[in-house]
Amino acid sequence: MAVFNGQRGWQVGTLAPAFVLALFVFFLGSAWYQLSLEGKQALNFDFKVFWSAGRLAYLGEPLAAFDVERLIDVHQAYKEGEWGPWLYPPAFLLAMQPLGALTFSQAWAVFSAISILALVLAVRPFSGGILPVWFAFALPPALLPSLYLGQTAALWTAGLLAALAALRDHRYVLAGIFIGLLTLKPQLGLLIPVALIACGAWRTIASAVITTIAISVFATLVFGAEYWLELREMMSVHADKIRDGIGSNPYMVSPYSLLASLGFGELFALILQWLITALAAIAVFLAWRSIKVGFDLRVAVLILGILLSTPYLWHYEAALLAMAALFLLRAGVLTQRPWGILLAAAMWIGVTPAFLFDAFRDSTVFSLRLLFFPILILACLVCLRALISELRRPSELSAHDEVFP
Image 1: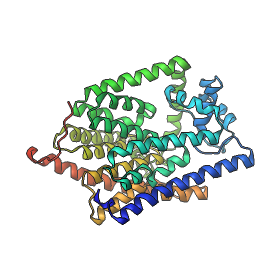
Image 2: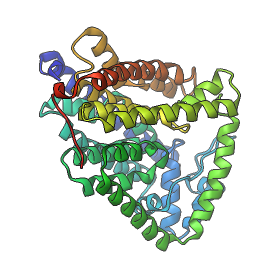
Image 3: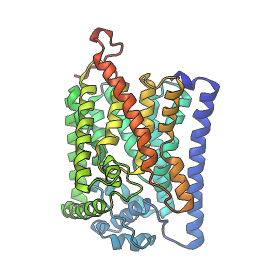
């Protein structure tokens, strides 16, 4: 992390986050002005679905969130042929319900402020007491697509980092609580149980299971058991739509989507995706099982494994690359050598340049996969090399063993 101690490190660690925050405030202000000027209910980006679902729940119609036409009636921001369903568990709808009492702009501002604050607090334990590191990774450029769209990537990342910080500090029950809250997006958490089982964190597993059940039961009591039937049906419809257009969707960045876009049959691409998921799970298990692998490298393997493991990965979730870069830097894998700094910078920036280019043009010029996958593959190769090196190291040479009872 010494690269951030110099003048250039301070410049990067302060100016870049300030730019990210200023650009987002500009987005927010522009939205507020446009809505007041044109008299619209909402703008046409992802947060409209969250706000509309929350508003329907606030008005006492939570199950109407699964009616796409009702959502459109609420947000009134729609393009021909667009598909914007509600696909989240009841606990998240319960969390969005209070925002339904606000206007779209107010709700977006509150949601974004909570997301940013959560990530700022979650990154701090891993900043090593270096302010530029804290600032740079609390608001990395890779986060801008999620902030711009009003998506959940910042919140989910904050929850993951909070769980990891608690696990590192041997606060196993608290770590499980945070992991239980990550069921907000269960498709991103496929490899978390693998890591916990590998290191024997049984109290964390029990706490995560209890938390998941508790919040699900409570939300079900509020909205009714029928919620799960509606969710299942909507997810089935959504899965069919995604599979039909997986190769041509420029914003989907999973290996599954890449393989389909390269001409592989959809079913064969999905089979290959699950093979990649299995290989990622093996790497995570080996990293978290061995006492020879340090905590930071374990986390980097887990985060990169998360990005490889799910067939349902959107471009705004590429923000996780920035966190993988943080832990590869902490582990000494990406050192002050030029190639390491360049790769860390690419992971820290993510797909944001291409995303902003498309956003300001209001069109899609090229698939974001073309930018995301070269960075991801290079990061995985570097991480895998470091993992193999650690696993081959004699036990007595391990300088920072981590053992989880």
